[in-house]
Structure formats: structure tokens, C-alpha cells
Length: 213
Image (cartoon, rainbow, N blue to C red; front, side, top):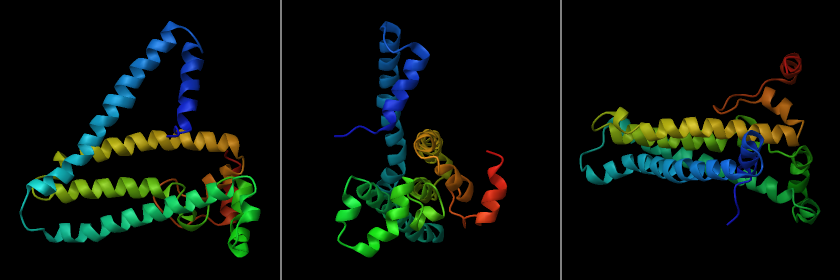
């Protein structure tokens, strides 16, 4: 299984603070591995699963709010899958020779500018720089409120809130890496909402804001 590319940057951060070698760095990384990568993330998964367990335990009729939340959660999952697919397609076309080998010439031409830029900005990514992240956060938040309708949402929203905070930090890291690799990403940051889908800014507004960066 391939490792998430961001972990290499996290390790480099440890190296900048504690040095690239030595016992202190090694021990610090192992502690981080135990507390965050292992225990914290397993605990987060457990907290996210609590609302799902509530659905199995409770046998009461759904409220109107719950009935409304069901199609919303389905849409969140659907849009997350679409966003992931759009991202995957761009990464596939970025491989050497993939764009020229694409059998659908019209499709290859429509994605050529994104391949050259290095990042996806069409489809759902036109309205949010991280539509898949937004949809995942919205899904688990909706699930918490769905399960909490029988009691209180605050009993189940902990996992969703921690996930949102964790993903915010993850997005910060992802964008810093992307910006360092693809300079044109700055214009995309100005033009497009970070998480919550919004209509993108007009080009003249992007230009007027560019001097602030």
C-alpha cells in the first residue's frame, strides 16, 4: 500500500525541528506515531462510528428531520465520489504519455490546461478547492445529527467536530505543498472558495485581490 505523500513532509518538519538524525528525533517520531497516527485516529474512527451504532440500537420511527437528512447524506456521498473521480482522472492524465494516449481526444483536450497547471479546477472543483473534503465533513456531521435526533446531537457530534479540525489542518498542509509545486495555484486560491462550495470570483476580482498576496 502506498503512503500518503504528505507524511514525507511531516517527517521533514520533524527533521527541521529536531534534526534529521539522533535519538531524540527517533523517540519523538515514535511517540507521535503512537499517540496521533495510532491511538488518536483509532479513537476518531470510534467516535465517528458511534452515530451508526445508535441507528442499530434504536428502533424508533424516524422524525421529519431525519427523513430530510437521509437524501442529503446520500448526495454528500455521491458528490464526494464524483469529486474524487475528477481528481483521480487528472492525476491519471498527468502520468507521462497518458494525455497523448487518451482515446477520447475531445476529453484529453478539455483536461489539457489542468494537466499543464498541475491541479484540477473544473467540475465540482470549480466551486470549492476541496469539494470531497467538504462533502465528507458534511456527511459525518449530518450522521451525528441524524443519530442525535432521538437524544441530543451534542452526544454524537464530537467525532464530526474533531474530523473537521483535523481536515482543516490537513488542507493547510496540502495547499502549502501544492502551492510550492504549482505557482498558478495561488490564482486558484483567490478565485475559489476553500471548502464551502460557492460561485467562483470573476477574473477582474481575482486580479484586484492578487496584490494582497
